[in-house]
Image (cartoon, rainbow, N blue to C red; front, top):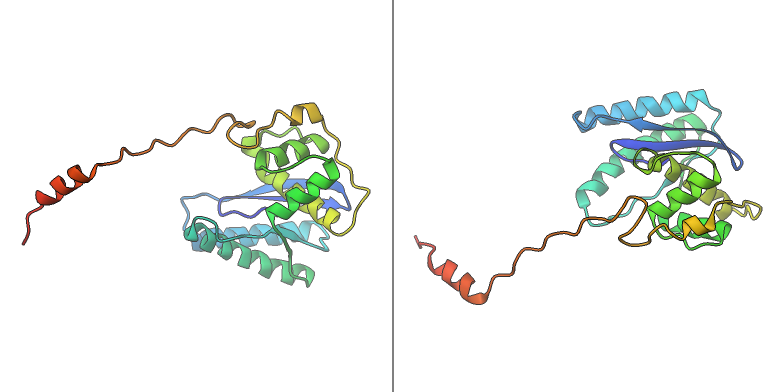
Length: 203
């Protein structure tokens, strides 16, 4: 599972064969208590529909936003609860960096971005997804396959067009298109700052 507060991707595998995939989508207009309840109910339905023996989810890290980290931690807690009750085992955590490293070993390419991961999984599994609506599902697939490679599946091979892959950007250019540059605020000189300060009335 690739867990988020609004759109969590999931994928069911039998060994390295994809069985099913999907999204758990939750409206941003709902409060977090209601979102967590919806997420929990959806997971229980998913676990009751399939005989799931093992679960892998993407590990979270602090990153630049403490708020996002806290929110993801809430959803991860729900996932831990449902996994434990449904399978008797806790989910296995794997970082996105580790997944990309293992995909690189299987594909004989360097995998550094979300866009590159999407291209490999979308092509190798013949999913025919669009990035905007399908990247959460391809991330879930990547987690499952990355875990298999991590645990010693040396036979797993990902087949795709390497020439097209070379056109998927690593930095600004990607299959999403160029990312807009942020406008930087003009720097104020020391004189203008001092002048503005002198205009502030003192009490």
